[in-house]
Length: 298
Image (cartoon, rainbow, N blue to C red; front, side):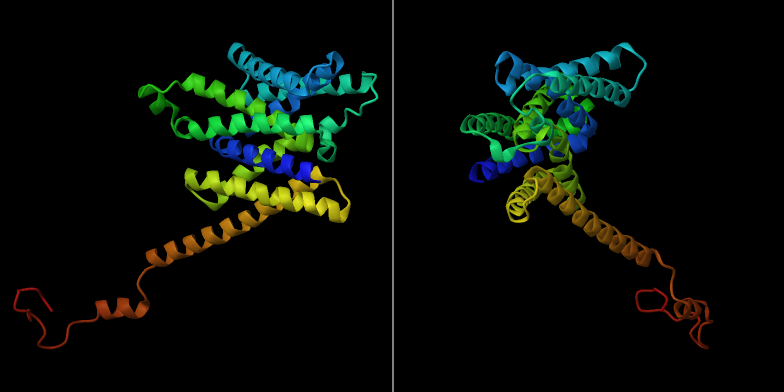
């Protein structure tokens, strides 16, 4: 349980930090694609006896490159290219899982097995998460400019293409980190839900980068502890807690927007009938031409 809690919290923080920029850029579907595309790499890594992280990272980057190639060489839009590539690669992974003779249950790659992580897995998660976290924090200003205005960034000399490639590489690394905690399927939620929740609660990127990891940590602790108490799957419950946090943020945002809309309507409301009648009433006898000392009519 201690190892599970450590891995889940670390993975949640890194995924939440990256999810802020994924939501702002509009790369949520790209995160989905990379998360599913790593499955064949994990299976092949097992077959050759290599660490899972190597195969997952290579296939994640390869999927991104393949999506870019399809988008640039055809008339298909980006979302269509993503859908075709990631479903095909993910299906290849499922076929490999079903046909691989193994005494190891590779299905935990799909749905996670955080309670079964080894000490080596913990070290791998900590190292990869530290690298991703450090790069995101150090380059947060450049990445934020890339998310909001790539044209302006290019004009001032920002290496826009390199930053885009760096983000995709960090996405692959983050997916590998989340893979140990919640598996391929649920890693998508960890890469989208915290950032979307923070986006509803604040309109400043600095606050988003604090709110999203905070929400993710609370969900990780509550989900891991709740899985022990309720005897349910820890990975699924962590994501359910993140979904509950999003629901609360959605309700808060709706109430705030309604209140702001009502205040705007009151400010634009026409004058009351009594006030309009008073303005339209004729002046009192003898009041015509009455002026103050400075010449302004009473």
